[in-house]
Structure formats: structure tokens, C-alpha cells
Image (tube, rainbow, N blue to C red; front, side, top):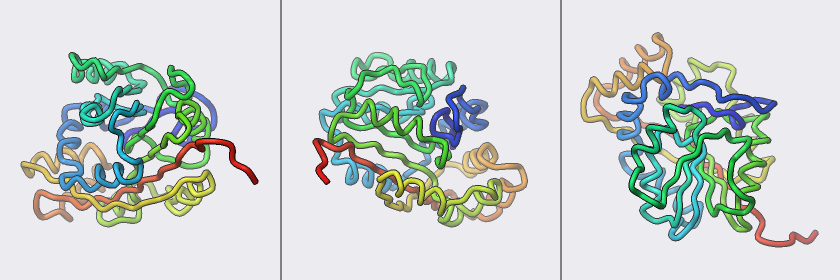
Length: 248
């Protein structure tokens, strides 16, 4: 999970909220990224909900160290990664060096350094805890979308066991139904996706759980997982920018 100014429940523009996982342990987070969505369920759902991105211009907000940018670039015409934390910006640029289709900019979600109507897909994955207060970031994403373009917000599903149970243990004030109502009120559709995290080594799994949760919850999570896989639920919220005049 990452946190990012503009989509993190802040009511006013401000600096990025530090992410204790990828900011402090980028190598461990790399292991986590490689383990996530091992069955491809989340990527498949994203393609189905966004109409694919062949030849599209894609913006990945809160791209971290750029792990997902090359995947988008396999099909997209151009990919822009947006990330506020300078060390992660540099890591993303090194990862994508040599691919002219990919660029990485240092910026926050509330002030994207991109022209109006320049993107077909704006994507944000596990970069924010959404809810009231993230309206400025949503408006900025809408600004850079072309008519018919899609904003896709991927977040963890706090209602899906076991990962959601661990999340709620550490964030007891987080209100999943309220977040769903917020997105519905802003015109998003919701698709719940069940995916799998699969690790090569038990030590990797345990190390990832330790950077994602408090020490107490991490111990519980490690005890709950017998093998090398963890079922994880996601919420995929999508909204399409109107392609023309909407008549009453």
C-alpha cells in the first residue's frame, strides 16, 4: 500500500504522505510487486473495464519505482509515470531507461504536469486510501483525460479475507462501505477482484508482511498463512469521461 497526496483523504493540497513500505524498503517492495497478482486476475479485469490500452496514452499516478510502467508500454503508445518521492522517481527512470515510450515525472496527484485531454487511461494502483478529501486529485485526473478516456482506481478490498482482516486490524477507523459510497456518488462503477500473491520463498512472504503491517498484525498474518500464497481482494473503480454533450 502506498499513500499519495491528492488521493489520500487530504482536504487540501500538500506534500506526499510518506509510505512506510516502499519509501523505506524499496527492495522488499520489489519482491512484493513480483508476487502480486500471480494469476493475472487484476490485469485481466483492468483490461476488461478500460477497453484495453492498445495504442493509448497511459498515465500511472503514484507509480512508485515504475514496476508497472513496462507492462503498460507493451501495448500503449506512451506511458507517463507520476511519483512524488524523488528516490522512487530515480529508480523508476533507471528501470525504464532506453524505452522512449516511457517517461517519469516528479509530481503530486493534485498538480499533474500534463496537458488537458492528453491521456486515454489514468491508472492508480494501491497508491491511496480513498474517500472524502481526494476530490482535487479526482478532478485533476479528469482534466488530463480525453473524452471517452477512463480513470481506473485500484485499491485493496478491506472486506476480503484474509488480507482485508489484517488491514482492518491496523486501520480500525477505515470504513469500506463509506469509501464505496463515495466512489458511487462520483460516478464510478465497482468491480471486486480476487487475486493471489505467490512468493518463491517463505522468507520473502514474511518479510513483505512485516513491511505492510504493524508488528502485532504481521505476526498474526504470518501465523495465518501456511504456505507461499496469500489470497488478496481488490476493488477496481472505473469512470469514463463523457465523450460529448450530455443532454437532460
